[in-house]
Length: 356
Ligand code: PMP
Image (tube, rainbow, N blue to C red; front, side):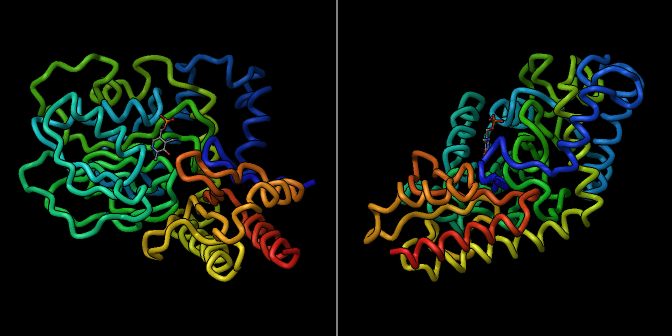
């Protein structure tokens, strides 16, 4: 049976990526060796890293003066590397979910955190608006897509300071204006590749401004100077990311992804707004994530939750159970998810409605 993969991360990857990884697992670039058994300093792997960096720059139209890195330690390590490297004394943070809260906790180790707004009062089910960002902070940090709660900030915020963003779960899903950012980071395991590498895009001029000593491995400059090869990079995940980047380019880049993502999300949100058994978790339409669509049973039908999950599972749907802090369901509809899988979920919801 065809599987429809709605996992939030690690999550669905393009068939192209999986096929190329499978080939390279046995014979990488004609070397007769696996991509897992060649030196990261071999000319074949250096070419992979170079091409991946070049494609990130091309697809996101990264301006001059920025470096692209593939690091390890997940987005969670970026929660501390960002303030370690960029926070002189004071930074602003927008608190829109569990990941923002974790980033705030780390930043407090390095200086003063101004929490400009928070939606914690309503279990993070909306995006705060009209907050003031003081002009004397080193940056505003925000999480562009809240993977757990299902809200998303779909436009680069307009603020008087540089932006730092955790784009783990929506990078490459739409165009962004990189010039507004001092730093963008994203764990690979949603829109890019398997877990094991983290994409970082950093403005070179944003670095070198803090006075504290920075441990070598946690210093962005180390990795810029050595082109992400200061220590052994995660070669297989970077190879996989390169395949997804090629697939993205082949499929019209981030502009085309945005169109398809809007269409996929509309299909599912329209059904959630219509179907009497279900309701979307995020009521404010403009705050709804295009990547992680969270929903619950209409309270009048709450007892059907388990039955629907089993019903959907019987139709090949995987990964629909919501995060424990929200409950209900979560359908992750990342770039690689075809519209057919979203349609299959909508059809299952309609069929379930007619049964009850
Ligand atoms: N930020 C966001 C928005 C996430 O969804 C996640 C979970 N993948 C993280 C940070 C943490 O990422 P990692 O597990 O790579 O540390």
